[in-house]
Image (cartoon, rainbow over all chains, first blue to last red; front, side, top):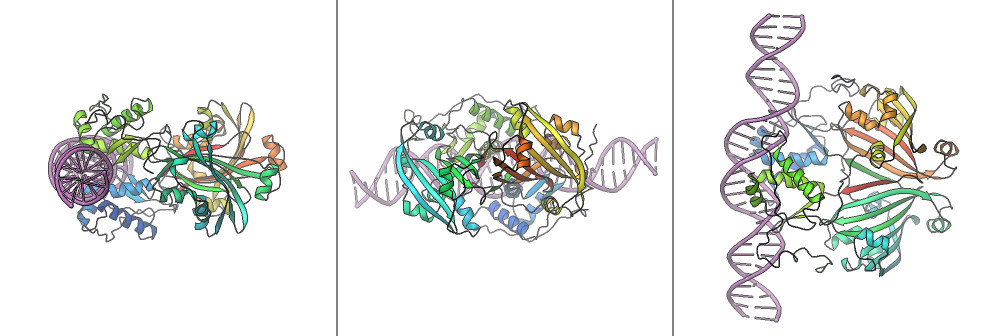
Length: 266
Length: 266
DNA sequence: GACATCACATTGTCCTGACATGTTCCCTGG
DNA sequence: CCAGGGAACATGTCAGGACAATGTGATGTC
C-alpha cells in the first residue's frame, strides 16, 4: 500500500550525482534603495539563468547563506521565496533548496498580442476599424460590471503581420477610464496604453474556443468560409478588482496559437 | 483619471474620523497542527467569499489585527500575503489592505479535464483506446527531455459526457514513472492518478490552437469533416522541473472551450 | 484661495531569537 | 548482517521590535 511503482531517485531521470551545494560570491549593496531581498533574488535568478547555478544543485542552507552575506535569515528566505514563486527554485524540508531541473522560465504573463508579436520579430501592425462610444449592451455590461446602457468605448481593430491579417479584435472599456487615440492604437497595443495611463493590470478571465468562419469573417481575415478560427473572450481586471476591459478576439488558426505556461501553487 | 465610477475612500471613512473597518471575530486554535497563518488565511478567505468582508472594505491595520488575535505581525502578514497572492486582497502602503472589488475567485489551476467536467456535473466517462509502451519518437523525446528511443507509455483516450464524445486525448509518459491501469484510467483522470502516486504537479507549458477536422477525426468525435476543432499540446512538469507528461488533445469546439484565469504578479 | 508643509496612519523592510518538523545518515544493539 | 534509534541538518513556523517609505489629510503660509 505504501510503496508505489514510482521512485524518484532512480529511473528515467538521468542518474543525478548527488547534488552538492554551490558557493557563489553574492554581495548586496546596503546603500542602495533596492530592497536587500530583491537584490539577492535578482542575483540568484541571474546565476540560475546563466548556468552558474546548475539545475538540481543545492543552494546551501539559509542560515549559512545569510551569515555569509551579512543578512538575516528572514531576508534570505524572502529572496528565496520569490524565486520559488517564480518556479525557479524548490524547497524541501529537511533536504534543502535546489534549482529546478527544467529550463522553463516565464511564469505566465497577461500577454499582449502586440507585444508578443513584436517580441517574436513579427513587425505587427494595427488597423483601427472603429473607435467610438456607445451604450453598454447587456452582455458587455455584465462582463464589465457596469449598468446597462452606460457609456462604453468600443474599439474594433485588425491586427496584421507582414501585411497579412492575423486577428480581429473587438474591445469594450468603460468610457471614462482612458482616452483612446486611434493614432496611438495603430502604433502600439491596448495594454501598453492602459499601463501608460496608470492602470495596473492584475488578472484576467479568459475563455478560448474555436469555430468555423462565416463568410463575412472569412473575408475580413482572408480565410475561406468554414476555416477554423480561434476565438477568445477576455475580461481584464486591475489591481483593485475592477473590470477594465472586455474583449472578443478572433484569430486565424492557420497563423496563430496561444502559448502559455501555468504555475500551480499548493 | 481621478474620478472613476467607483471610489474607495468615501462611504465608510466619511462619518467617522477613525474608520473602524469590519471587525469580525476571528480566532485561531493554537493546539491545532495547522499553521496559525494558514488558519487565519482560511478564515479571511471564507469571510470574503461569504460576503462578510465586503469588496473594497478595509481590513484594518496589521498591528491592531495581530494584537486582537494574539498573534505577531509577521504571522498576520503571512496570512494576508497568501491572500494577496491569490488575488483576493490588495495592499497599499500608507492606505491599508482592501478586499478586491470583483467577484473573481479561482486563481487558475493546472486543470484536469476530468475534474472540471465532474465539478460541472457533466458525469464524464473515459474510453481507453490504447495503453502500451513504445520507444520515444523525436517529438516526444524532445518534449519530455529524454533520450530518443527510450521507453514511453502511450495512452489514447476518448473522453465522453452524456454518452457523447467530447475530446480525444493522447498522452505520453516516461514508462517507469507510473503504473497505469486501464481500468483506473476509465474511472478517473490522469492527473489524479499521478498525484495519488506521489507526483506533485507544478507547472505546465501549453499551446492552444484550432484546425479543421479530418475525416478520421470527424468520425472519432462524431463531427462532420471540416468542423472546427480545438487543439491543445501540453507538457507538464513536477516540482523538481522534470517533464512528467506530454499530451496532444483534440476537443470538439462545439462542445468545449477553455476557461481560465490569469494572475499577474508584479 | 492656492500651494507648500507637516503630522499621522499604514504597509514595507530588516533584524534577532527560538522552537517545530521532516530527512538523511551514521551508529549502536540485536 | 540487519534493523532501529538518534544525532545532525535543513526548512517551516512564530514572536517581538525597529526604522523606512508612502499616501492622506490637516495645517499653515503666501
